[in-house]
Length: 366
Image 1: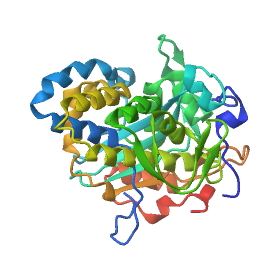
Image 2: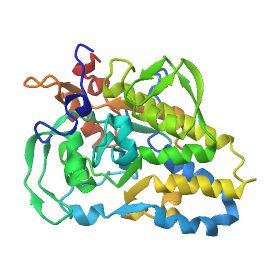
Image 3: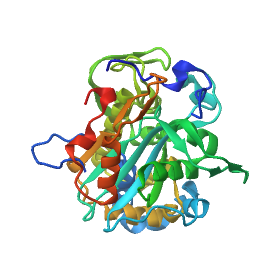
């Protein structure tokens, strides 16, 4: 990368300063795995292992937080896909409140959308593509309603990850729908801090550290090679960016995807059927980390949706980044690169193949 897309923490302790702020699926193409729906699959796996013990899990419904996206957005939304395919907005939220602030270099209130992915599951549900929206992308935020009922007028040149912290998840959904023209069927938010308890419940997660990581901000100090991480280390791992690659958010996104895949692999090794108590503990930790749209906000609905995607092989998942270019006025920000971005969104709206040209991102030289 010729320039470093700095994260908000490096520019300001407030984090939100400044302006409001299927790919070609040929068999020969190497596909990058994504863990965006891993937690859903994990829950389905735990429930399946529990079998007749579903009555135990029903008490976990209250753990799952729901957001009525449909009510908040009304009827003025893009059309649904012309097929049985599905589109999800997956956010990895990153709370910096309380003890978690230590990992961000200080106690900072509120939460931010640390990772944002539009996950497209084509008709047939045997593969998936996840489009990562860099959090420093400048977007046009539409008019949104705040939690207190007040209406916030739309604004241009808003930093994408500030939308969540200032206006909440419904506004993020509306912003993504308006910038892409893609109707989002479901919303899934994963609180990375919630993985701390989940990892400890499992007994740790082994990840293959590609290069040594020494992050003074979080205290994370790992050598290269396979490392078994406990909950505290795992939380630091999915949040670190210092000392990883060029220090941009792209490196952190890669670590999060790698960790989620390792987490799923670890759960598959567990004898959940032989240990209902452990399965219940794991399911409890997983559900506490979730916020979904109201349609999925029950264990039964979430499990049914997860099971409907059991045919999605991780090997057939691909992650691409929204084509972006450095902003001409502020090189520390990026903007959607045209016509590539529009071509990408058009393919998603039509549940069609994504042209190779739509994957090229000037900001990364791709």
